[in-house]
Length: 517
Image (cartoon, rainbow, N blue to C red; front, top):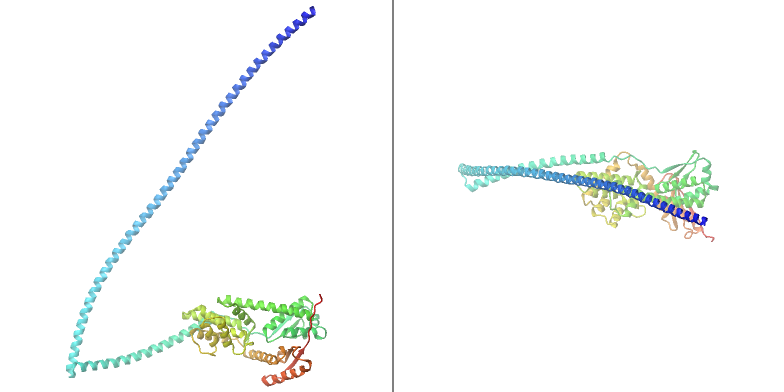
């Protein structure tokens, strides 16, 4: 019983203690919640103050910015208005000045009209006075000479006519003499000016090219076993290769500058390559021919650019490039054509003519020399036919055909080109007649050899002391070789004049090419 009461008392005491603790905890919780609520409220108030201040500051900044923009726009409008006002003021001033100028001009015109009217009245009065005096003199003359009025008039007119004729004849003669002197002086001045403005180098074309070799051992490789390499090279290029005791050089000789340049390029390539044998020689010669064709095309383009002559047919440009390797009495024909073009343009400018047309006539005047060794006839007529074929103007065609008087000149540009041609050809050192005769003799030597049937090509070598002839194996038989060579030699003796003797070497070979695949 006592134990029960004790337990009961403990339970009651524990329940009271638990209730007390629960009440205390609730009280603590309420106080804590109230404190947190007060803290949150204070923070909310602070945040609201901060946001309000930021909004006020932002609104003030926006208002300030809008005010600045408005003031700026207002200032711009004011500036524009001031500028417009200044313009209006200037225009008003200009209008006032123009009005004053017009008023002055009107006053001046009025004064001039008054003066003119006064002078006209004076002239009319003077004419009337002179007419009366003339009539009086005529009457007096008629009375003195006891002639009628008509007779006196006829006598006076005859006398005046005779005096006027005499004076007019003397005046005409004086004017003609003065005009001739001025024309001669002007012509000399124009030609002198053209020569001074077109300064050109004095050059002479050579007929040999010297090639440096790395060592004398290379000479043996160029010659080849029993001379097969040098023979193959000369046969492929048509030049004469001179390998003598001169150390470090090999000389290529040919009157044809195209062949000589092609041979020089080919031999230089062979020396650099080191593989020198007949098959390789033929390959390199073909490559050199292509390079020469490119050089010819580029030379034509450069000539067109240098003279500023445009609109030429592409074939005309190619023909001009071929003139780079042609000479006339030792003078390079392309350089000569460029000189004539520039001189013609200068002369035409002094005379007030078409400069471009004059330069075109001068540039093309010797174009026939590019093909005169392939076509019968003189180069002026050949060039005129080529120009006609490429639709050149009549002035250009006549200038080409008539610059050596082969046909009659038909316009002033022909005279200009002929004069420029003479200036370019006659300047000191421009030409050498002996070299031209020598080259023409070699060209004729080749033409004679090629004129026989069955001959593919012919090359004059050894300075014209030998002609090497290549025969077509299908058209010339072995039994005919000696006879053809003899016929060529006899024809050369008949048509050409030359010192010493000329060796005719005729080569006939059969070449067969097959491919193993």
